[in-house]
Length: 186
Image (cartoon, rainbow, N blue to C red; front, side, top):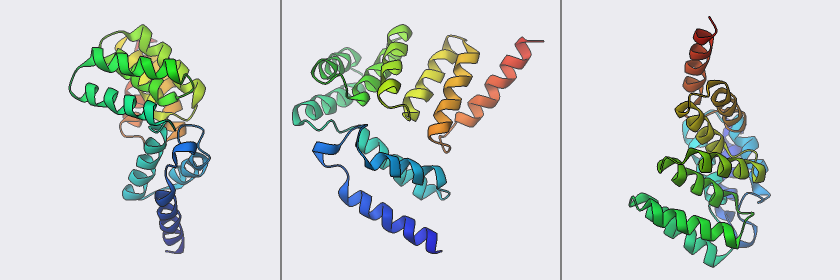
């Protein structure tokens, strides 16, 4: 009971302080603590809140201009205007090549457009900037599954689960991939 109360109070404090524009993005010092809490979390609402906070930090660049372009890119994605979204995220990368989530979003758009090579390259850049980016690792697993690179997909989903042990669907993907791999070796 005390642990749950302490976790709740810590989360409340983090929510109130996330994110200050100057410290937001993958280099935000709050992320280490959030990932520690996520790893130990058990209750679905706690897991959801922590995951949301992590994504919220990742999605803020620290620049009003970049954040405006980022929101425009996300909006274009949601509206199905993938060419426009690709342009927005590419512009962000030109302005701020150290902003991991811009690379991740461009990887997602490239995946949606069927450009798996470009998507893989952008995921690799994302995880070089933020090795705990469970969304990027999971996306890489999906790309490799689509390309039938099962061993690589398995490795990617394992990396995703290492960062976020509560990632929906990742365990099932790993089980499926192990079955495919073991079946292909017999």
